[in-house]
Length: 344
Image 1 (cartoon, rainbow, N blue to C red):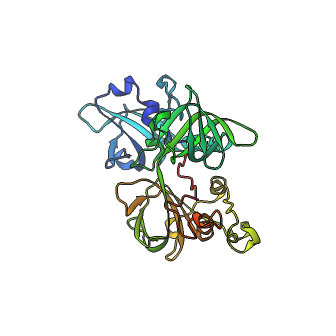
Image 2 (image 1 turned 90 degrees about the vertical axis):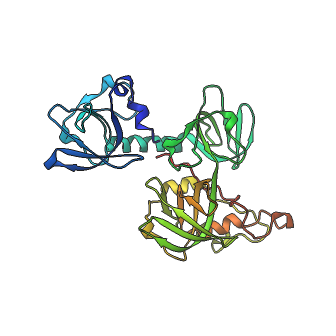
Image 3 (image 1 turned 60 degrees about the horizontal axis):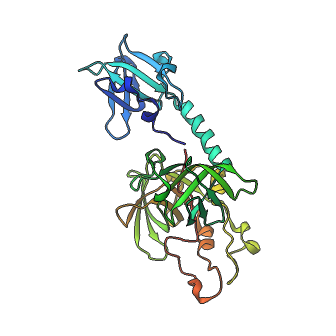
C-alpha cells in the first residue's frame, strides 16, 4: 500500500527547517552537481549539492529519524523519494532524506499481497454497528480498533485516502478490508477498512490520444461520449479470452440462467499490465473511477481492455422474469463489481 512519504518522515526536526520540498528524483546533472526533484503537485526543482550536504536513507514505514542511516550521494537513484531541506535563502541542499524506489516497490508488493491474502472486497449491501455485508456474500466484522480510510472524491491515488470512520461508510460504496480471515474466505475481522464511492463505465473506444493520455469512448447503453483520462497511478490491463469460462464455452448463459461472475479481483491480480498503446479503436473496455465533477469525463483507476465477454456477463438478466430489466445495461453496471481500490 502506498503511504505518504511525508507522513513517514516529517518530524519536528524536519519541519524546523526554513524550507523543504518532498518529491521524486527525475534527473541528475553531474556536471553542475545538481539533482532534479519533482514535487507531487508543482514544477521540478533543481537542487544544488554541496560538500556540506548530508545524505541519509530511511526505510519505508520508518518514523524515527534517529534510525536514518548515512549514505553516499552516489547511492541515490532515479525514482527515489526524497525530502530536501535547504540552506536559508539558497537552492543549496542542507540535508536530503532518501527513501529508495526499490525499497518502496518491495514494501508495496508485500503490502499488496497481504491485502490479497488476508482481505476481502466488494460492494456494501448492508451495515450494522459491528458488521458490513458485501455483495458477494462476505461479512466484515469491525470494532473500535478498526482503522478506516476513505478515497478522496477527486483523486485516484490511494495515498490521498483520508482518515475516516464507520459512520461514513454507505450502502453502495466499494470496500476492501483486511485482518483475520476465515478459511472459506467469506469472513474477515477487520484491522483496516478502505472504501469509497466509485463509478464503473463500459464503452467502445472511438479515439485514442497518446499525447494527452486520453481515450474517448461511446458508452454502452447510452451512446454518450465519455473522455477517460490517465495519470501515473492509473492501471491498464487486457482481459484474457473468457469464452471458455461461460456455460457451454461459447457465449452468455441462456435466458433465465444465473450469470456467474468470476472473481475479478483475483483475475486482475494475475493479469500482466498493459499500456495505452496496447488499446485499439473499436475495442470494448470497462473502467473504474472515483465519481468526478463532470459527467462526461473521468480519471481511470483501473481500465480493462478486451472486455466484450465481461460486459456480456454483467448485463445478462438474473432471471427471465420481466422485473429483471431485460437485456439492457444496468445503470452503473450494477452487476459488475470492478475492483477500484488499487493498493500499490
